[in-house]
Image 1 (tube, rainbow over the protein chains, first blue to last red):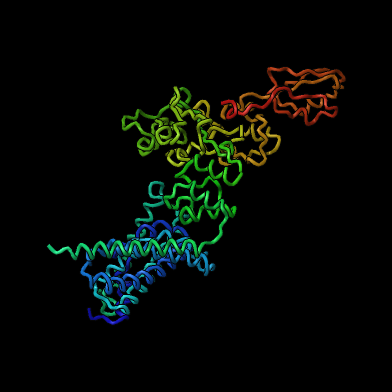
Image 2 (image 1 turned 180 degrees about the horizontal axis):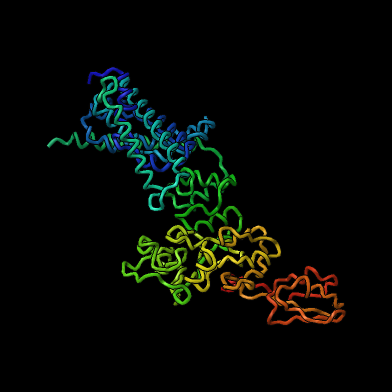
Length: 196
Length: 337
């Protein structure tokens, strides 16, 4: 794939947003988007883990799985590696980087093998990205996740106080709002000539 | 057949598994951080679903918040009362279900007292019926009485009584509020469990309109408001609103109400008895008693007519000689049940 890093970033960040177009990581999208503060913490954790996981799985795939010809094991291997990695990072942060841990550490176990994380690592492989492209793609996806979940949390905070009929209160109106946000993001298709 | 691929697969996945296991095992020892042991015990008592229903990020987050005292002990709805009790044990705090509110029906218009507007022939369900002109009952505020609440109660505390009104078993009710959320007429409310007196009518109509549709509906006459000794009641939109902070559960409103729209949850109330210290000042009879239960000539010992005394205790407050005793205990129905 002949794409420069900027195109990859825009593609992952806006056009093929991991939440709204790939439909990955929808559980936190509805689970922790009730308040902006939790959404920010969650998206910080997702960005962090997404980047780490992309690096580790890319290296593992290209140095172990591909040379040995066992690429069919990537689902199992990636889940294993990401889960262990997240556990390790959580323990490490808890011990040495207390401030970072208290701001996002509690969200780490929730995204142990979040489908958004796993999806991005698979896409890195499927698109045959090199390490730099993978990094850009992971950062873009992570930021895209953060952007949408924080935007959506702000919408849901306002929905709390909106006069909504009883049967639509809670999740139903959230789903409607999510679809409208998704439609709005369609407007980014073809931005800067990118359609990844 | 070439077995090398199988070997690579086994070695690759197995090797990675062992490697990760060892790394995590070492890390858990090397990187261990001392936490409040209660946190870990609470974490183990929780279901571990990490559902986030408590409002905290996962069970770990909730456990940490409980230990810090930032979270209520009963926020885990998945675990329910059993988990709440365990957490209470660990934290050394009493979490009794007595503190939980109790659901009450704020309508007394059963089929004997409240008329119907039309014959409803649809699905026998409150929410369905409510969609059709607000239900068959003539009073649009009242309980439809098709037992949707009884169906949704997770602890089977609600059964439908003979008058087609839900009968809430207060001993079983955990105050979860499921029925309150489901009731299409919003005639179920959560009441603090220690609260004894409440108004069981939701009608904002004027007195005449209420009279036409229901024999036990509040007509907004305001007698309760006038007689309340602590000014806990105020009339808003033809319906008395009770300030729970001011209300002392004396029960005067219950007995003054001409339509019997109030409910008294007390199983029994004490009676006033005047002892020989009475000097016949008549204060209790003239100033305090709103039910003409005290009789007697001035300067002679007064007497309480037991049938008329409601046990509100107002006379005790005005007696200058401490000559009045309240005999008998105030019975909470939740204790009796």
